[in-house]
Length: 406
Image 1 (cartoon, rainbow, N blue to C red):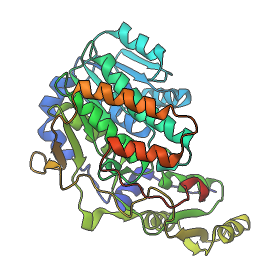
Image 2 (image 1 turned 90 degrees about the vertical axis):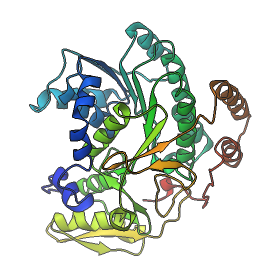
Image 3 (image 1 turned 60 degrees about the vertical axis):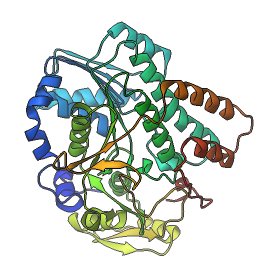
C-alpha cells in the first residue's frame, strides 16, 4: 500500500503532542555536566541496535565521546545502525567506533570486556521487552535469563574494572508488576541497586516508545504495507514518548543520577494516557482513511482480502483486552516508593535503599537457579517462585496470551 508518512511529525502531532522534547529544559540546564561526563570518554552500549539503545547513542554524540563500542546480537540491526549514523550529516562520529554482533551473556562478550579494560560509561538495553513473550515456560525462562541472570553477570564483570556510570533500562511495568516481563525487570532493578555502593548505577522506568521496534503502533505500518487489518485492544491505556526522547531520558538518567536512582518521565495521567485504538484511528485519518470497524478477526481479514486500493476505508478490529499480564494502565512509581518530582523539570526520581546486599544477591540467584532447574516446571510454578523474590508481583492470568490474538 502506498502512503506518505513523516513518522517524526506524526508522533509529535498525534501521539506525544509535543513539538519540543519533553526533556529539552533538563538537557539545556545540565549541558555542562553532560559534556564533562562524556567528552573524550569511552562508551559501551549493549543492545545498541534497538530503538532505545540507538536513540541513547545518538543522544550522546553531540557531547563528543572519544570511543563508542556497540554490542547487539542483531547483526542486521547493527549494520543498519552504522549505515544510518554514517549517512546522517547531523552526527559527528568518533574515529574509534566499533560494533560487535555478540550476545552479552556469552563468554565471547566477557572476553571482549576484559580486553577493553576500563570503560567510562556502560549502558545496557539488551532485554526481553514484550509481555507477548509470556506464553510458555521456555520463553519465560529465556526472559529471566536475559533480564535477570545476564544483567547480574554483567554487573559482576564490571565490578573488576568499574565504570564511572552504569545504566540499565527498566520499564513502567516494574511498578506493581502484573506480568512476568515486569516482574523480571523489577528483580533486575533490585539486583542493580545491590551494586550501588560498588560503583554508580542507575535505571529508568519507561513509557511506551512510539513506533519502536516490535511495538503495536509500528505493527500498524507493517500491516498496512501488507494490506492487512489493524487490530488493537480498546481498553488499554499507555504513556508514550518519542524515540528521540527515549534516548535523552536514558542519557539524563545515566549521567545525572546519584547511585541507586530510578528515573521516570513526568507525564500527566489525565492528559497523556492514550489508547492504542486512538493511535490507529489518528494514523488512518492522517493517511486519508477512515476505519471500517469489524466485529471479529475473521471479518476484518475478509475485508482486507477484498480491499479496494482506491477505497478510503480501512478494516480494523478493536476488542476488549482478554490476555494475561495486561493492566488497563501503567504507572511509574508506587505509593511505597520514595519519589521526588522537584529535582528536574520533566524527570521524576525514586531514591532507593539497599534492600539486598551483594551477599544476599549471590544467595538469592543461586537459590533461584536451583528452583528453575526442576524438571517439567509449569508456568504456574514459575510465577509462584518469581513472586517469592518480587513480593509486589500480582500476576494477571486470563488463560490466553498475545500470540493468540491478531
